[in-house]
Image (cartoon, rainbow, N blue to C red; front, side):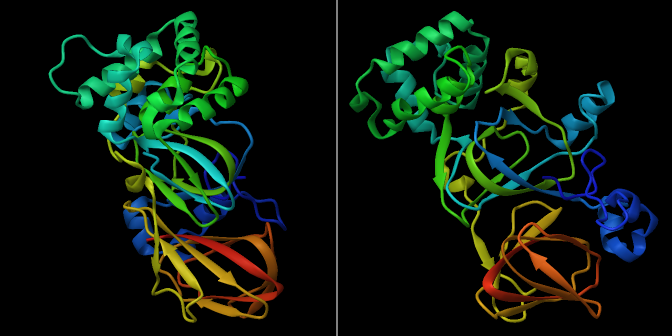
Length: 359
């Protein structure tokens, strides 16, 4: 479910059916504010989503702004905008994800010790650096389907203790093969080079542009810069995979361990009653507030000098703004213009609320 003003799957006014981007375009100064317009143009600069993942989403990267501008110019049908797409994902429950690169020593240990993997390592290299890792990914992605399947069969026969602390590879590999196939090179790239995280409700990750990631299972809040550009290379049919050379050339190598991927929360100065925390990714487009209320509790969010999208992920209650009182239940979504204070009141079911806002 998308909740922004992006022309593909835009949010709509519940009463009139008018698309949000048209509403914003007709009321830019009032809804976005001068600061947001000056920084990002006359659009909401972020795109919140709710994802329910039962099958691994494609192994992908989102190109950086410079590459997006070039790809959009060359092929606007496939790359519909010139923007980058760094993103965050917040777990609503158990959430499994591949994101960012493992510690370089952990990757090297696998390719040094496991015989089936040695063929992917460049022959001429003095250090196991980022260029070697990039070439390994390229070699895996270029390998024939038959050799990809054979490699996975050989890996499955190696005793678990040979994998050291990465023994989970043998447990996750059959799941990936069942979802797609033994011929999918994404199985190897993800399991051998990327962090595998199992997160709980409230845990979050930050994925910068050009960083590989694949969401495996779970329900999440996702929010990203306003873009729909993507390069896929695994966990999808071959016909849907993008150019391998382009994908690998665009790769960057941060974050480089599981802890660097994770995004914590902090206290926020937007809260008046201390019931709200804030996710603040290292990007300019947005932050995300999370408000958790128990039976009868209230919270007020100070006026923000930019637009917000507010939505409830559990419970029920009321939302008050500009003298109006609205029902606010699980699945309800509100667009809040700049400069508007918002108040929440929970019913006996409690209320959990997320608010993405332009900084």
